[in-house]
Image (cartoon, rainbow, N blue to C red; front, side, top):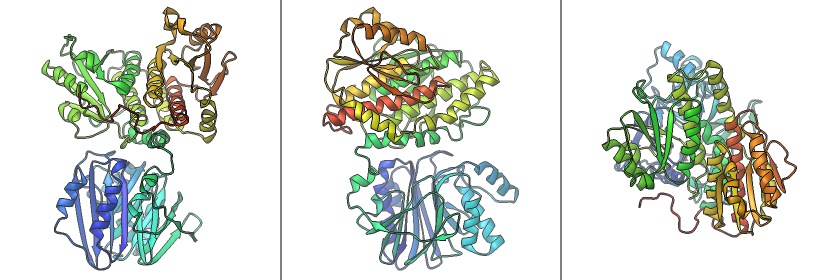
Amino acid sequence: MCGIVGYIGRKEKKEILLDGLQELEYRGYDSAGIAVIEGEKLNNFKAIGKLENLRNKTNTFESEGFGISIGHTRWATHGKPTELNAHPHLGAYSYVVHNGIIENYQELKKELQNEGVTFLSQTDTETIVHLFEKYHKELGDPFKAFEKTIEGLDGAYATLLITEAAPDTVFFAKNGSPMLLGFDGNEVYFASSDTPIIGKANEVYYLEDGEYGYAKEGEVKLFDAIGKKGFTKQALTADKALAQKDGYRFFMEKEIYEQSRVMSDTMIGRVLEDRIYFEELPEDFFEGIYAIKICACGTSYHSALAASYLFERIGKMRCDVEIASEFRYKEPFLTDKTLFITISQSGETADTLEALKMAKAAGLKTLTICNVDNSSIVRESDAAILTRAGIEKGVASTKAFATQSMVLWMLALYVGQIRHTVSKETLKREIDAMLHTPKALVVEDKLHERIHRLSKRYLHGHGFFFIGRDIFYPLALEGALKLKEISYLHAEGYPAGEMKHGPIALADSELFTITLMPRSLLYDKIKSNVEELSARDATILAISPEPFELADDFIQTKYDSHPMLEYFEMMVVTQLLALEISVRLGNDVDMPRNLAKSVTVE
């Protein structure tokens, strides 16, 4: 999500910033901007869409001599993708860029507005620059003002601030979002990751949470909660591909680990203390709607199938799910009392887009859940909810599936909320579970190592069954899809209760059964189903918080208080299992054969 670059020195600053931002494109963005101070002159440029638009805007701008500069690529969280919401954000005489979430921005914004400050954007970031200028007016010292500003922020942030009050200085701070300093002689660079400064800086320092300070030409002062501190630089890698992966072996592995962080971005501003809120949806959006039809393909179809349980259970609204490629040719019966929801990671999925056009032609109200703003499906829909997963380079979707599942869970609760089908107690319980989801998605070293060791036992055999009940049936489908996509081993997902209706004929010691056994939902039922398979000598890998004596292998999960927390934790386990089996087989995990990231043909 989002990207930051900065530079202090005498080289052409515009090109350093734009080239650095281009190296961060893999993180995903919908707008970009730069700000440069040379002498006492401050220049600022912003553009929505691709970096090419920003390059065109800065075509005639040149920066010569010593100066300071900051740049940013933004992926919308607070506020739509507009130039006003793009970074850098301007105060009266200062600019700021920021990655992360300022959790107390609403309180800060209200206080500043009461003091007469006018806000131009809808973002949380703008509060930083106005807070800084407020304290600078009070204290008269730019660094003390920055220090007090950082003390007032709650949440995650990596931020750079420049000001005409100190035109030779860049102020920086890091808490929860990545930030590093690069060095080449007297030149100082700033970035969210290594890639923007590889080939420019030769040494680097990776900021720790809670560290902040200021930099001038050839001078960096670093502080933490205790006070001023020293730091040790290290050599900078020269491998840009490795730097983009942040040390992970594959982008898919990196994206599995990112799920905990991006889930917070998905929820921010939507999961409130006592309700679900979507600024994307008008208050009357569900007026006259009595049923939901969801259309999607592949992984998105699986998230939709899980959501159908939630819409009916929580929202008390009928929900049907269609595979887009089938829907298009079945002569579907459509009524204008049905909300038509499409789901697509890329927003360009051909079958889903054509299904959406059919629904619109039939007069249905349409909503899309997507990761890419301004994509074809988003533009075609009446309304859109962005998943905010950031760019996903691994062809086999991981964090796209996780964030789609979360948006649909939130939407099901939102429907129940506006239809008054959920009690205050249920609403509180669901919101509490949502807020705990990022923790359930954290990949612990012990878990990953356990799955790595287990994976060597699952390289041969005549196939895999992934089984589950209720929402864990779609998760079983997704687990099987992940495995076959990247390992090329045959895998099928089944409802656990369906095994005895035919598939159990395949059961023997060479059939690997991955069973999802949540304690919070139908545990005794699925336990009975697994016992039937075990009696036929199937090899059982049980994923559960409850030890299972008949399992040949067992991966113990921790969260058992809510089905969706178990759902997300087990999702991570199945993703890691597919990854580790595929790595042992020597496959290219990020680029599996015959597959593409965005399916734009029928």
